[in-house]
Image (cartoon, rainbow over all chains, first blue to last red; front, side, top):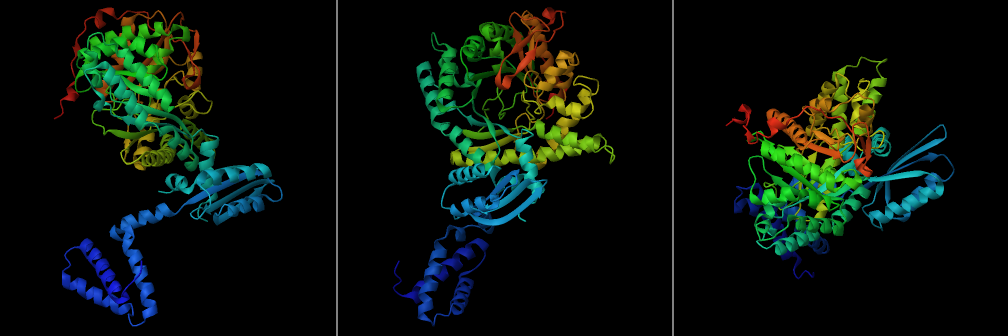
Length: 172
Length: 464
């Protein structure tokens, strides 16, 4: 959306946001809203036009964000729901290339490895990989089947689950 | 490390080698909007509604199972007690209630669910004409369908025991066994006689969608006797190294029940969420539900506590400890605990129970005592085919009395196996397992049962 007059745009958006916040906190009169608006505008450094358009656009974007219009608790929930992690556990007899092949397929799917640990006891291999799949290029079912295929190719058993299962069962 | 090794590996062990599963996700469906004075209309509406609302249940459960990583064994639907929905239709000239049962069966097959339950009547104080018609139709309706389950509530703590209904159900059970004689009377595995039936039980055969429920609700039945058993066995193996008493056992069971329940709630909420805005998550039923698989047995838990065989003196006490610890762990884990919530002790579905009966350790009378401290009652018990209807009615009344006097749910799922005598064996297959035919007292109950009427509600019912 084109911004005709960045100054006016920013002023309006800041006022809208302040009013939205005020409505939720309650018992805040218009004079307080005005004061906060002025203070925020002063802090935004409206004297620098190039920065202004960016700020306006960013504020506009934020104002449209439904999170801003809901409560803090909802926002936390929302963030938790966005954390999209899968725990991949591989077990089997140790051999060369297990870690390399599995991590390669995870990378290929666009998964971001957040944590990895591996132990070998008596030539028995156990590896746990925590993958952030928020920005994965494929859906869960495809991710799952690709990882499983690779695991089968290197001769290890693999189990996948969203980490919310662990969160539910293992943490109070 | 985001997750500790032992946390991940314990969770996997529970699923892989200790049979942790979600026994059932059950979609409760109100059929009250399907009532019609025309049987044809009623059938059409019931079929349409089930196909419409349960259409995605199986696919959604499969997707959740993949993501959560825990198997969901059964997908089911529970409906409003059919006698309440179809009262006006049954009143029509020449209406056959069994017709509606076939509609349920066909709809269940179309949406791919395992069972549909709620061919039910609640007659604890008396029966309407529609309820009487439904009860009389049970042998033909349930005997002639595959996926439909029936239940009849004959008693509550508030109203007492309807002895007329008990007597009638004794006859119905025998007729249903005869109708399915070719398969060992398997029809009776789909019929439960209740006292204090609950409205949100997700487990078949006794599930129905109660009058206080919303239009659609999603209830979950967890399982996990194998998980509890393995934990108790590990604990007992530590006896040489540290002092362990029954209190320690209870504590261990509580912890496991907590974890199992959390898994159940997670699955329930996910499935409900994905089914759409009009489906509400209802409850988690904490019942430990065994399967015929070795290592998935309630009997084995009791034996792991040190009983030589289930049925040995001390069994009732051990079962009381187990049931109570499961409830305490589960209640800590979820604010939505409901259904039957306790421990099931079906005979045919539990390999340990079958072995105990065969070894002569477990009798019908001991089972009855056990039902006073666990969640349901005499469940999947096979008895000789020539057991008189009045004897079965007496058994129903006894179980109802335990429920009514103790303010708990009890149920009977008894199978008089046509042509079999005590000591024979009957094989049902699948989750229903196989059962030794148990001897029943040869002393008669006719005089008492035929008195009929209603056993008054106990003094504990006057609570207001």
